Image (tube, rainbow, N blue to C red):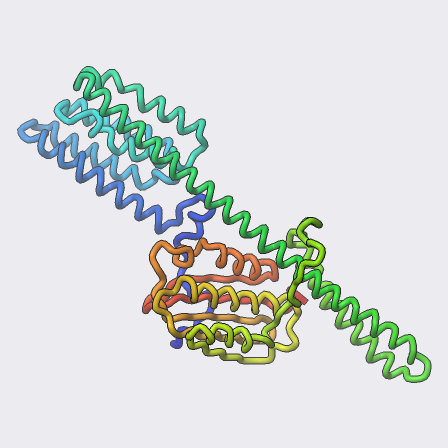
Length: 393
């Protein structure tokens, strides 16, 4: 199947979408579990096997407790408080069975759970968890003296601090996403305002023309009235979109500020030419008629293509070709943009959390559609949107 013909339903889930909202996606949660389990098995598991040699039944009992800690970490994102309590209890049990294992090492899984709890739960909850983790400090002092106490308190503090840093990073990401959505909604509202104003102006002119010829040429008057009806339906669709978007403050419409008229898919070739001027090969494919689309859908489709091409230029390393496929199927318009570049790891485009992708998803959502984006298995990046026509008209 040609990559440009794939539709949104065929795209894989974006594994970073939930993380942009401050949550971990299932894929990221599984990766965190594997890393945490590997750390606990490598450090605590090895220590137990080394120290527990020739300790009789204590060794298998300690191994079972370590495996229980590893299994409990599977739910550290969903229920970090319960996992922390369980791992703290089993860790103390491991230390009681094998005192030669340091208390810091025995409670390693609990420290991992503390880090996750600090990153995902309110600060007051994480502070209480930190205080609870400091309760075994006298045991660390009794077993290892001042050095053992210092090491234990340092590792617990670092685990909590790492979680707080991650929480602050997530908060900044969420704030950035909210700001991007608000800015995109404000821009959409301004554009829809222009479209509605134009439609209403045409309706006023047609109403005046119908009044002038109502008696002498009734057929021409009827044609003008039908034009008014069509324009009114279109304007109602635009107003629905306007009401769902955030209207920009009056201060944002500065006097004398130049704003370009709302573009449409009819100007798609002009957009492609601007990208071709950079040396990129742009192929534009159209199927079906797009000249009769509601203005909101037409504008949203154009902006999605525009932003997808911009992301290709910015983030697709080594890309020299991009394909734009627009299909009008009566009930919906499907837009697919595929490039052949290598998306840089860690870039906003790769993560699916960049401002450009946020804006595209918001535009699709406001007209009742959907948009999905992600890297392709064979290389390249694909943006695919489905915009319903009936809901916007």
